[in-house]
Amino acid sequence: MKILKQILVWTVIISIIVIGFYVFTTAKNFSGINSGPKSSNNNNTSTVQTVPLDFTKTINILILGSDQRSWDKSGRSDVIILLNINPVTKKINLLSIPRDARVQIPGHDYNKINAAYNSLFYNDGGINLSIRTVENLLGLPDKSIQYFVVFNFNGFKKVIDALGGVTIDVPEPMHYHSKLGDVNIDLNPGVQHLNGEKALEYARFRYDEYGDFTRTPDGKIHGRVARQEKLIEALLNQTKSLRTIWRLPSIAKAVADALYTNLTPSQITKLALLLKNDSAKDLNIIPFPGTDRYIDGISYVVPDYDKLKEIGSEYFSVKNINGG
Image (cartoon, rainbow, N blue to C red):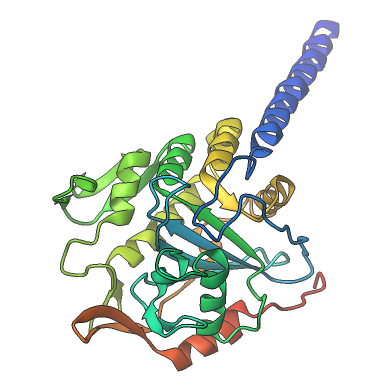
């Protein structure tokens, strides 16, 4: 019995040491966020203003996936996702906005929404203009979107690899090779486990009859936007797995290298702990109200502007929840 007690005590001690090491390493790796010169367009500086994280209110985070190959190059936002997190219910509302959505850019004319991020197209293009554009589209008051996260292609691949890949059901053959050789996509249909490179191919593919966004007569949304939503659901389910815990240090390192954000390491950790048990059932994906249409020979997704204002009011207005 004495020997068993000693074994139990040493097991607990070793467990504490191991867990402590992982927590320390994870925190240390997270501390690298925004420590480098991630200019991410001319109007996005490497020093960002942090905003206190208030768990008594709903939280809006704008996620932008840029087509930048590196942080010192300008680019457009190929992925535009708005998240609303309720810290009490731990539910998440998600709206994916097609990059070709025809919107009013504040201070400018109508254009595709992804142009708002490009400082080569607009002098004031960048994160701030993208946030103001989304707020305007949803009829939200100024500063309703408190936080942003920007990732580029290389960062996306690193994070997926750090997570150990992602299992996804590829619905159709996906093959495309650009003339410049900068886009090469080769995926066969079926359930498969994708690494970062292949997951990026899945997320980027839009070279079929549905393109980036198509609403069929039955009301269903198809195309790249719908696939990106499925990818998020798969990742949310997968990251609940216990095996991911042991990947935390490498995930933290990949995230630190991959993201440009005004969330601090401490805030990211708090959000991760808050949502640690969330799965796809806690995710409310709101279909984007719009139709694909050509205007003056240019392909757009034309939104239902009035419906988007309703969506903004119902799902993305900042609400005081006061812990209850």
